[in-house]
Length: 431
Image 1 (cartoon, rainbow, N blue to C red):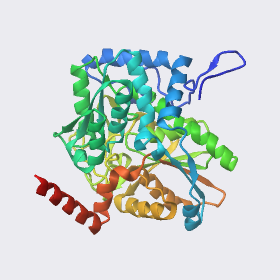
Image 2 (spheres, rainbow, N blue to C red; image 1 turned 90 degrees about the horizontal axis):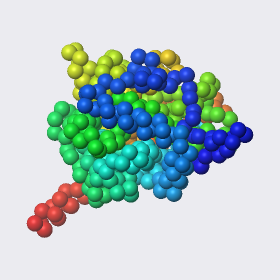
Image 3 (cartoon, helix red, strand yellow; image 1 turned 45 degrees about the horizontal axis):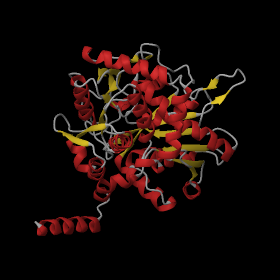
């Protein structure tokens, strides 16, 4: 989407979009957000804020961003009418925004392109990243290869073990993948390790992977990802002649949810639902990652939001069948939207996710990421309650190819286990 000319002759900038729920100039969404960072990081954050503020007013930057989305990332992604699933459920229409068809298999490539262009504009030579499920890390490694950056990706050791395919591809792309062995060895620990690297190496760019962290990251990544909602507005208007009644997205940090929701926040008729990881159930801390079911307001990793915390106020352990939704915090704008009643947030259990996964694969031939399947699971529960002319759009934020080890184990696939045993035995025999 190149910039166009308005009647005034000024460029029509994609990034010149605002809602009543935006951050103030200090990066606060109401009481959430802000910049709670070590003093050594403040100059880097201020420089990033200045560079981004300048870039989004530059039509040339916008044109280059959309050029790479169209010719490299594969945008726009399709909005698919899930006719079989809709008929089976017998209620409202379900559309799937298939972000898994982006290059690298998820929505993550979009904000990675945007941040890489900012980093190049700032003269940076190295990218630092955190990753959970590996989709963000893979996207950063891909962009580093394309634009010629050095790249280091921090990943919790637990996630390295359960997302080995993405680790393999990150390393092939030239990234150094560093397993994080402290804490719970998951995403929050990877974020902490990446920020420590940035503190000691301010000449690098920290390519944060969601709408979290200190200002300007929540607003910057939201703006880049809002391409998703922009595409959906156009696609659903052409398909149905109206805006959707419901938007549903899974919620970890919040990049795919804010990407879908943001361009609809000014449309009061559109209801928005974020779906958290209910894990084994929300009754016990450590069994889930549902921040609004068991969390409270706190400050961590550079921003103020809702976090899962123990009795002492420390960040608590969390659980999800998906590697990308076990993050114990949530993006500050989503916390603010929930507080203001603009969005609803629900939790879906691992068991419901696996049932929804089997259903959508068998009815539509689409293999969604386990993160995205949380959103599908809620749509499956909601659709039968709606009239047939009501419309749900679900953001399928990524492909499930990366989850083959988790899914095969969760479904108890004996053929897969036999294959793995034979493969390991074959490798051992070759030593």
